Image 1 (cartoon, helix red, strand yellow):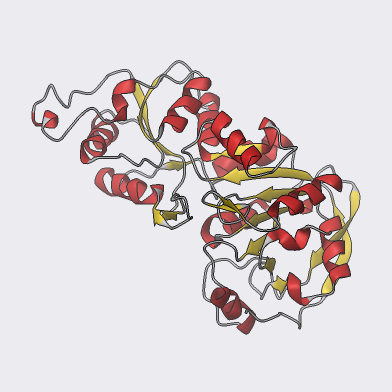
Image 2 (spheres, one colour):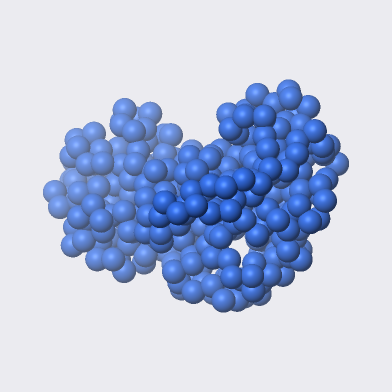
Length: 339
């Protein structure tokens, strides 16, 4: 069990909202901005936890490792979301998982028992990528895609042209001839999301489009590993493929997932979120917590996913050398259920 940052006190002050009006704000006293030890919610007075929750207008939740693990809901997660909704909080679910369409994403949320979350509350990296492409003028344009059917469907819904051929019909043998590796002159970008069937021929074609046709590389996320098996086991993530293509082409990918500025623009600006009164809740330091830090939100790290209690022990002890430290930590979001 991780230790408690008991030396850190509770601080309530007055802040300024995004609209410029003074607003009461309860925050956490840390040693410095995201550099001191986090406050462990289980180690402070419940009234203080309630005061902190009351100071937050918007909660942005990661999904895998926070609300569910694979196909199993995290204990207390459904009650926590329902409690926040009853309190009038805005709730968004934001995942770097790009494998599901909008409909499939909504069905999983509902199947696991979460209610009251309409389409406007759900943001996957497939959705954010489709919105980026639409805003960047790719409607009616053709793209070369590596990814699951859910990503392809999501892109098509905003008018992006996704040829069926991209699904992997080419093989290494077919690439031996110039005809077999001929580039489609209408392709204007390479889009890469996690794929269970990515093969070397697809990587070759993506590389050729980027190097020879000079099209941009647009990716749903850069996660090194992802909990995409039914039991939540970590396996190679989309970041492994992204790194491969960046290495082979020398280009830098445009990232549409956490913790990118692209997603921040789509989510924060698109929904009018006042980040000074918002909290990002996640289980990954490099994506979720970094996204919260970079957007100016408070950050709640939960230990129901990939980050271990030993990492929090290091933060509390002052021996942690990682790039980002959350504002607060909890075992899971179940602690929010009664607030």
